[in-house]
Amino acid sequence: MNETFDRGMRVRREVLGDDHVNRAEANKSSFDHAFQSLITESAWGTVWASDRITRRERSMLTIALLAATGSFDEIPMHIRATDRTGASQEDISEVLQHVAIYAGVPKANHALKIAKQTYAEIEEIEE
Image (tube, rainbow, N blue to C red; front, side, top):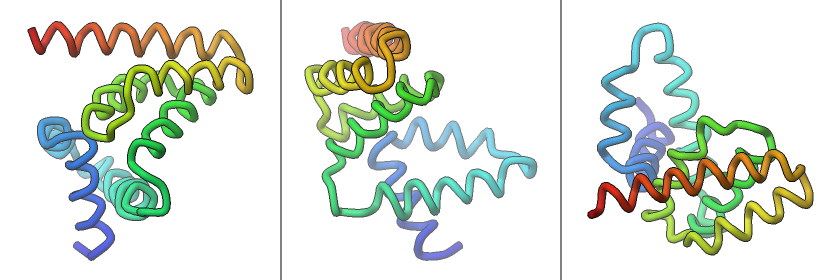
């Protein structure tokens, strides 16, 4: 491919884990191939690859933005990634309080519910 794509795939694997990326790659089709390349290069190869802020901070920002925009389907994936980004449960709790104040209590409440469920699933797997 290209340098940005390769960097993006490396960062994507570091943040989301090989299992997640391998599943996504296995499910890729000719229909969504261009989209997958776009997000690998732009989101992972450019934005997430930047060292201007830490992965912990980027993780917190991402979860806040997902909650604030109502993009709830992406939240579990990013909650699971916090183990690799360094964002703690306390960090995410703080982030969702900010979402409540600046984007609305219903969105933050729903995101909190999803986060709690995802953390419970992670703990169940670890037992």
